[in-house]
Length: 78
Image (cartoon, rainbow, N blue to C red; front, side, top):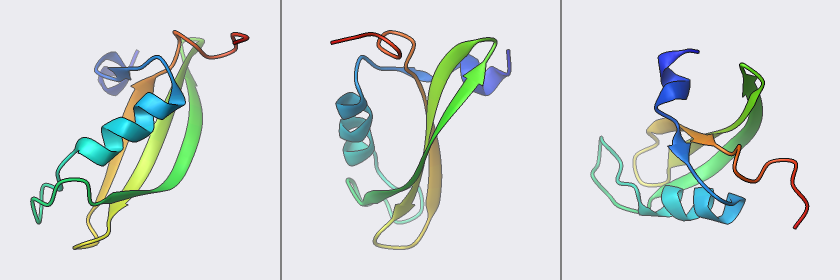
């Protein structure tokens, strides 16, 4: 498994992914909560599901990708 996948953030819901994105600070302009989701992709690595969120800082335009481990809830009925 790729090291990026080993360090993916473990979440229990999609809402938790979005809350995480709203809390991170931009490394370039240091503004917290400035990222807006551009693309969300479902990726499988070693048969395990991950969400990759590509975001853009609304203040300075910096881009960031965040990888989430969604195996706790993916494919399960609620």
